[in-house]
Image 1 (cartoon, helix red, strand yellow):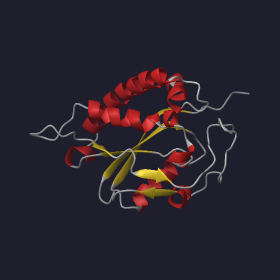
Image 2 (cartoon, helix red, strand yellow):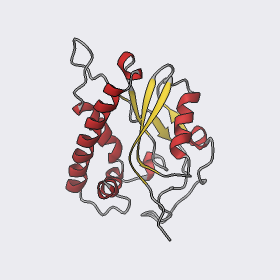
Image 3 (cartoon, helix red, strand yellow):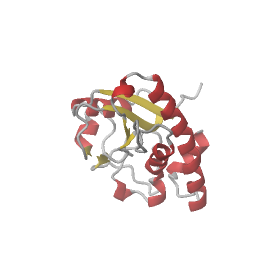
Image 4 (cartoon, one colour):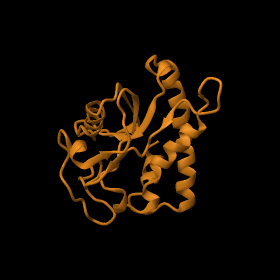
Length: 187
């Protein structure tokens, strides 16, 4: 999974367009199956349609090359692949809101201190950084959220801060789903 995440992030613009598309499809298949299982197992998603949102990257979209913004594309594709539909219809049960949180100010990356252009501007993570550097595009009031991130980095608090931001904006609940987590090297 770590190789897929590195390819989809394409931090150093080393992946070809074809590689990124292939990885996008692979990740979307994994996430789609997982989302369907999560929704079927969690009672809060039986009554209210879950809203799937992505933790935003550390910089506004304009700071990235288009090939570095494919994680949200993979999430949207995962939702399209979902087998769960509204009863009596064809509309997907899971709501695609992967772009509802937009980063509007730069923050430092948490997983790497070196990025492709050599710039790592903005503040280090702190409680409230999502509130201070992001905008929410639509109301989440009363909605159950599945918040998706590629990598969970322990002891940094970005995912927790993003979840708190959603709760502060009225989300009824937030479930965090990540594809992987960072591990500390053993000494």
